[in-house]
Image (cartoon, rainbow, N blue to C red; front, top):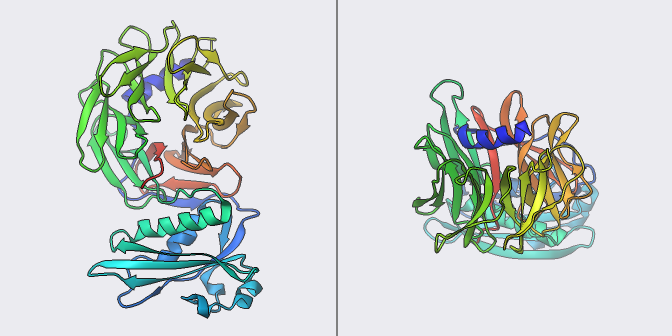
Length: 430
């Protein structure tokens, strides 16, 4: 139990993570069984745009572990329109699918990006569309194209146009550590600083509409929970009670915030109504209760407690009542997060003395270990439930890692300097 107490306190008093530029993604695992797909360089009419749309789309698809884009060196031709496609050429190369496209001028600094997706061996078009884009928005447009292709080929919504929040730290141990809360595209590009401090920042949590972040700040030497609008930067302090104010989690409708407070002497789970500011206590036990997470239907919350002597996952009704223990396999289970469909929980579990990311059913059974690090923590599901992002250690410093639940390539997200920790994957963004 020492580690859960320490983890609770450290996530409230010590900064984690973060560097100066974009996250760099490295594929660290294989992609056995990945489907070959050819994403041809997009043509351009007039001034060629600064972004290589096709390379962004190909990289997005490769990161899922389900697709293996062909090298451009192997492409005999680079068609831009359907009439230029010779399916026999791509059949010889073994590509199951083909993506072509073109970037057309749409105004002064605007573009129209058109693309087509083909079934190579069926010799037919599966999808064709055009998207308007500004010059600055071309990367996001490429992610939207990748989302459309992924959904057409898998039946599952893509997550490439989503974002991730994370905490970084530079200069840890120097006495002048700079901690930053950032938001970046799902591939690590376009990082934006939300707040920066020489005091700890931690526990970022997205609102369901993706417009706000809740987080813990120690900027006044005491932990407090803030809500911040991403578009305007406007923020407000919503919890600054005596003792611990931590682990914020938005309800599925965005109207309430679950949090950990020790204002009554012991860390317990509370729910704050954001409109009325009414506070409701959900747990009341001599043991620690922390790390709440709402079920997608808002009927229940899971949380971590040591009330059985060791950290385990419990479930309580959002209306209050007795808590039910869910996990029994292993001596340490903590930091549970519901999958978007509510059928699974990602959590931190201890395996042979090492802390790994695990997956269990919503009722706590059937543990499956997903990661292989020595100190993996802070799991967060992609909004389509296909991947889990988490904090890990690599060469002695904090990094992020992403693992597809269906197997395949594992991604490591690092920065040139500093550390990065506490990831939170955004909901689908409009």
